[in-house]
Length: 296
Image (cartoon, rainbow, N blue to C red; front, side, top):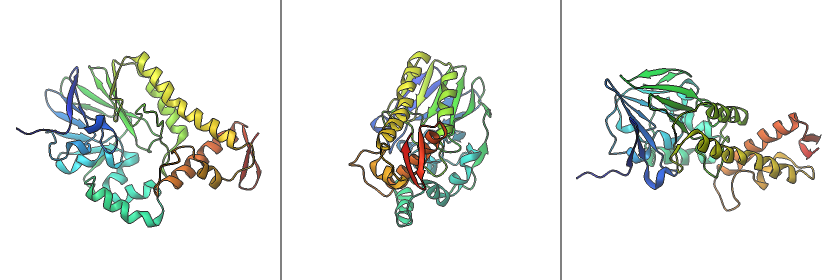
């Protein structure tokens, strides 16, 4: 008897393939949607490697390694939002998007290749916001939710009332917008868009799984979005004295002090810059001299 490293949970006609460790990174939760004509898989995660269920079409929420690791097991057509298409077609472009220091690039290529099975997918094609996939008696509609990456997308499954929100994952870590193509402004707009879509179930790509009911989802979304406000507060307190972006990055808005790795400094720096730009725009921070900032 073949065993799988994922657990199946049904929500109407939608099957969530809950990844190992409840979908915590490096795993993720996948979604299988069956219609009368076709079967569609959303997010080919690491837990599907070697045990991937059959599908006629594969949709990728965005071009991050934990969301594409199972693609090697599929010869079916692969689709992703145009904003992330180049990164899915080329692992080199994917690595560039992480914005890592040059000395980490080769190690990252090796990790993506050997641990996440990431290969170039030149056959992948793009979709846009609002693209509808009709599976026969069931539709999957693209909901573009940028900010995490330029092409990050969710998927609305009808008539079941199931919205997969991918890496708007409601975890205590909060929103991540530290890649070179990420955007805090876009991420916050995407959070507002999710709140406006009233459905029965909201599926996340990681530990929080599926949330039932718009009220519960909205409450959890408040807590998730609140992490951004906490980062603002941390930054404003630190800017009681003039600081540079480098000093803010060292102080950290995103990662806890014990977290190490080549990704930490560039992510902290890009995150700090986005918060600074927004706070300057609202008059809460001022540039007291070139490259040095203080709370107004």
